[in-house]
Image (cartoon, rainbow, N blue to C red; front, side, top):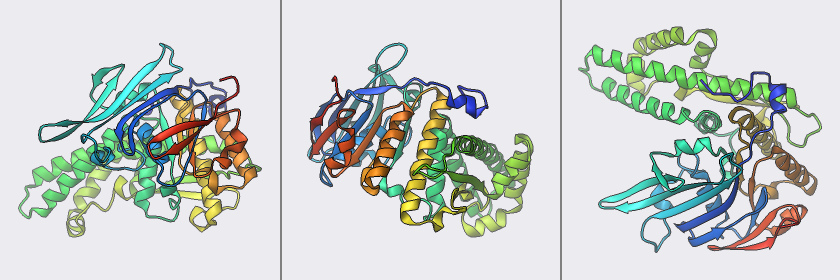
Length: 400
C-alpha cells in the first residue's frame, strides 16, 4: 500500500542516501502579514527570529501549504489572505536538488465571482491538487500546539498519525476524507427511521473498504516507524526513543486478518451495531475510534505520565525518527518546519538538536523569539530577523 524506496531491512535503509530538495526562493504576496516577500535562503539550516506576532509562524505556514491538507495551523484559506489585501494570496516555492533541475511550485487563493478558489501550479502549469507536489517535496512539522499531544484527546493523536502516514503515502488523505464522507452518509441514513436496508448495506460496504485501507496504512507506518526506532535508538540521546502502537478494535481486526476478511468482519460489526450507532449518532467502531499509544522508552512509562520537559524531548525524538523514515521510504529527505523549537531546551540540548537536524540531510526551518537561541548556528545557517512582514539577514553561512 505504501510505496517504499528501500527494502524492508531498516538497517540497510539507514544507509540509504536520499535526495534533498532545498527551498532556494520563497515568494509571498498578500499572505497573512506579508504584503510581499522574496526570500532567498542559501543554507540547509534556516532560523527565523523575532518577537511574538512578528510573522515567523506565518512563513512556516506558507511552506506547509505545499503538503496536502490545511497547513500547520489547519486554518481556513480565507483566513490566510492579508487583511487589507484583495482577498486572495499567492505563494511560490523554488526547489533545488531535483534530478531534472530546479522545480517551481505555486499555491494560492484566487478571488472569483461568488467566492474564492484554491489554485496549484507546478512549473507554472495548473495542476489539480497538492498531491502532485509529493513527487518533489515531503514536509514534516512540529508546532507548540502539538505539545499536549500525549495528554490530549485521542483525536489529536489520530490527526498526528495521519500526517505521519500522509508524508509517506500521498493517497492516504484521499482515503481518510472518503471515509469521513461515507461515515456521515451512514449517520444520515441511520437517522432516517425508514431507510431501506439496501442503502445501509451499500453504505457499509463502502465504509468497510475505506476503513480497512485507512487502518492498514496506519498500521504499516506505525510498524515501520517502530522498527526504525528499535534499530537506531540511542540510550545517551537527549531525545528519548518512543514505543508506539495502535489501540482500537479495528486495528486488532486488521492485525489478525487478511484485508478481505477484515472488510467482511467489519461490515458485520457495522450491521450488528446499527441500533447502538444510531443512538450514539456515530459509528463507535472504526479508524475514527482508534488511538496512537506512546510510551517513554527509557523510562518504561506512558508518555502522558512523563514530565512536560520529557514529553517535549520525546516528541522531538519521534518527529526526528519520522523524518528518517520519510527519507528512507520516499527517497527524499523532508523539509522540516519547527516552530518555537529552541526555547524549550538548555544550551547543551539545543546543540544536540541542531546536530541531529543537520544530520538528517534535508532543509530545516526553525523559529525562535530570541536570535541568541541560534548563536551555535552562526556560520552554518541562514539566520533572519522577522519584523511584521519584513525579513532581513542577520547571518549567512560561511562562503555564501
